[in-house]
Image 1 (cartoon, helix red, strand yellow):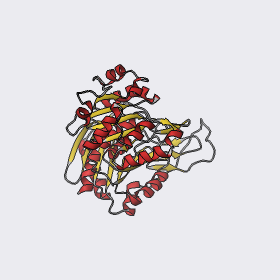
Image 2: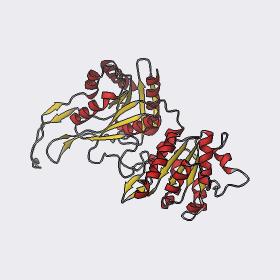
Image 3: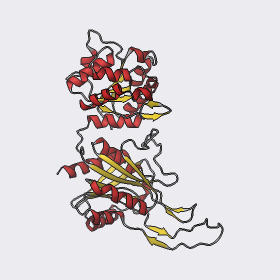
Image 4: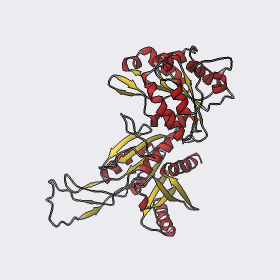
Length: 403
């Protein structure tokens, strides 16, 4: 996500500075190179050696004759983005007033003057965050193009945002944002049809691919709505390719709409696409639904279920929005690329889709995937992590929408 991106990481005197080491590690795990800049207050909470260890680079703790602020954040400086995490109320106010009395605020002023993107993740007690002067300072600095990563307000504290939220906003700030101004709706996860108050009929989809597509669209600048099927073990969860979500919204990159049944997903999607610019239909929507029983069925008895077909989501959306660009996903149980391509082309033509992402169903729940990107003129194979494949899908969608 942050391959070949240089991040200057400013650390100020909030107790949330103790999270900086893990944040630096996560930035590097996503491909970034990181250099730390610390205020004297931050050094009273976290030793510079810890940041040096986490970044594998020397830390700026004072501005000397080497003009470290210009070398890092000047017009031809090292940094592609200046991230301040955590940022105190004091620091935000100083940046708004162009006050340079710490290495962090001096780097911020330099970055703003040089046109280097600045991302700020505030952390403070809630009354400080609600102070009119702090709110005015945030609004003023946002008008200059600074991106604020909203804190998680819990226990009367405005706690620093999750690592995922910060990393995503850093990636968004350095991207060209070809989807800026576009509203993309993404469906993901598995739907479930109730058999009785306890049991459901569902499938093995984890929703990881859909969530990865939603993240990738957010990084490219889109406003994203995620309609997510949440069944039993399949809510947004922590995996190596799908980091832990912070408290508050489980998906900081999207408006999150949880649903359970195929009908609920259809209703939510139809509402979301009313003002959408594109739909990515990555959810594994159940094809059949039984007549649910009011009481739990007794175990140990033979049972037959009468199943009725559920409505086809993309068909319904196509009827509602004939002009809407739609990306479809098609899972098949076949080892044959030819069979997957044939199934993809069938749905491509039947629903007039922009392109189809076809895959074998055995990748459900896995970290990696192999897909075929199929449109009227091609069938390109793509293989890698689901995040990497999702980035390709988002890029293809961006090219489609700018035409």
